[in-house]
Length: 106
Image (cartoon, rainbow, N blue to C red; front, side):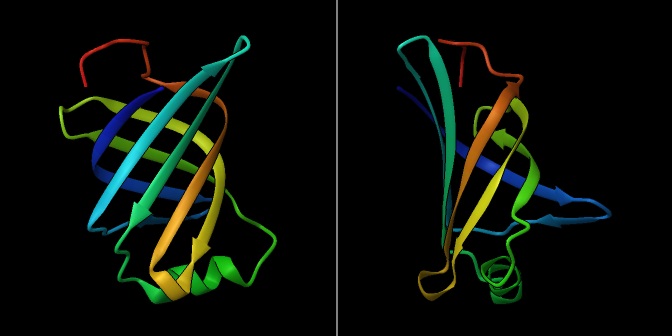
């Protein structure tokens, strides 16, 4: 498993987009049994309206654009799973994570 600390995170859904403010966010990429999975854990999200919006809908499919602390740009599609009570969220990626190369500089 590789982990990357994120500097910025943007999220899009149809015509809407959000720059997500956070205390810390981490991208995790795993290769198991020939399958690559990726996830983003985000902590300290102050935007309660955004978290509540996604907590109260089944439409959680989003596109994310992230930049790592080291400056690497990444983009992919995933499902946004908010936890309003704890001001956290997780993005469970599906499909390709554009910009990712195994073992590359973070």
